[in-house]
Length: 113
Image 1 (cartoon, rainbow, N blue to C red):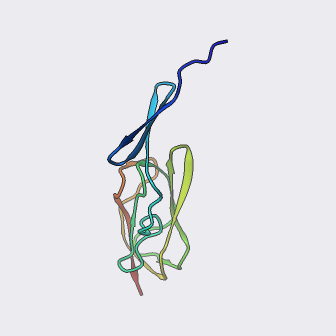
Image 2 (cartoon, rainbow, N blue to C red):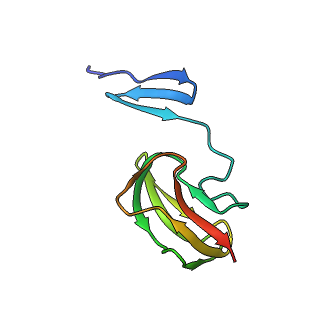
Image 3 (cartoon, one colour):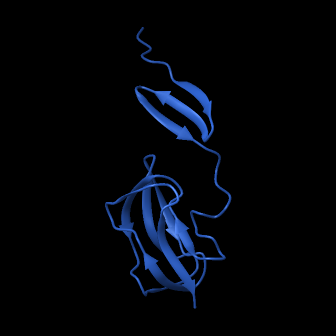
C-alpha cells in the first residue's frame, strides 16, 4: 500500500505551517478586526489574505449600500466577497480583476455620505 507523503504541522509566529504533498500553507486564527468587511470607522477594505482579485463590482465615485458586494477575492481555492461596511461612496479603488494582492493591501476605501 502506497500512502505517499505524510502531512505535517509546525507552529510558527504567524500561526501553523502545514505541509502536504509538496505544498505548504500558513494557517492563522480567524481575524476579528473586521478587515474583510472593512473597518466601520474608516471604510478601508483590506485584503484578508494573499490572493487574486477575480471580480470588481464597483467603480470610483459609485454610491454603495451597507453589505453591497464590492469585489471578490480568490484565496486558498475559495472565493471571498468583500462588502461595504456602511452606506457611502467609493472614494478609492485599488483593485483590478486578475491582480494578485498581498494580505492587508488596501483594495477599496468607502467614505460615508
